[in-house]
Length: 121
Image (cartoon, rainbow, N blue to C red; front, side):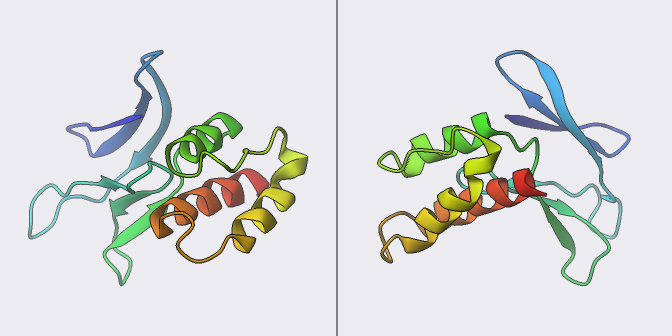
């Protein structure tokens, strides 16, 4: 995935392989610091964008899919098979929660949970 911030403060998330837009998010990036940026989490499951919220940013899960969940798992939890269907998400989360501390990086677990939660909504 690749994020591109347009001149009109729309963040477009692209699939770099197919060159298609997966999602678009309006960003309130104009302020005393000028155009603000955005940041992906270490494994690409979450996206921080500027906002007017008290924290100054919102956390989104761009383009959640079983394929995205599988790609993140392959990067940071190769011994943990990703769910084959949406029905298998609860068992996947239970398996993730049962991992001993330090088995996978915290950022990996957070990205996997975020994508799984977005798929379960």
